[in-house]
Length: 149
Image (cartoon, rainbow, N blue to C red):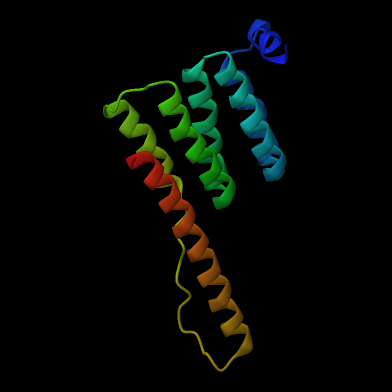
């Protein structure tokens, strides 16, 4: 019954939701925005409006990644790929460009320079760097594996 109601509900154009969700991210509510991107895209998918779901997911992944929210951005990026499959989108230049756009938003991690490994603060800085780099690699590789598959 809920599914029937979702299909009957008129969804606004995706750009309206993208604009609203961008404001939530700019306010720093990354987790809240993440949940809203997922639920909004799910509504478009349920209504079989895959193109708009892809627009929402791509915008969400890109803005989260641009704000160094790697885990959130990667999750939306993987959902983007899953939606490509669900919507039966062909592999073509446009699809590849979308995947490339998301990939380029993954933040680059700068290696700290001139660390003194006898200094506790420098060791802490190196530890944080390695944790961030590991997260980035794992998240980015999950996205790329899904996209290649």
